[in-house]
Image 1 (cartoon, one colour):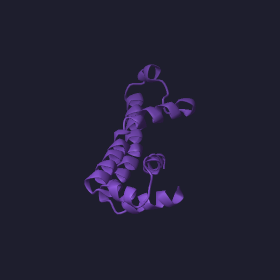
Image 2 (tube, rainbow, N blue to C red):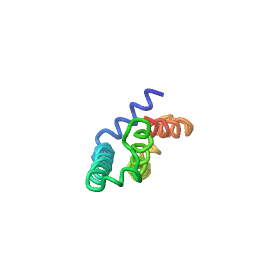
Image 3 (cartoon, rainbow, N blue to C red):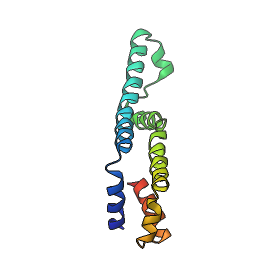
Length: 118
């Protein structure tokens, strides 16, 4: 399976859109959470009574839920990466070449799912 993942990596590593979307996704996770934290801090400083309504979303017990919820809005970026990789697979007919090279269909699908998890 590692051999098949290396072959998939060879296809993906030179694909510019993959790197652009990956970097944009990672940066936007930090940016969205920072913007939410900044808005929360500014709201609490300008309107002291709002702290009772807003609560403490960035304090320790709640921070994991807040960051997870805010970051979940960005999951369309990895989805777009997966769709682009599969569309390229069929546009450039590399799926046929993989089958010709001796991959079974089970291996082909398994490697795609493994790449998604990695």
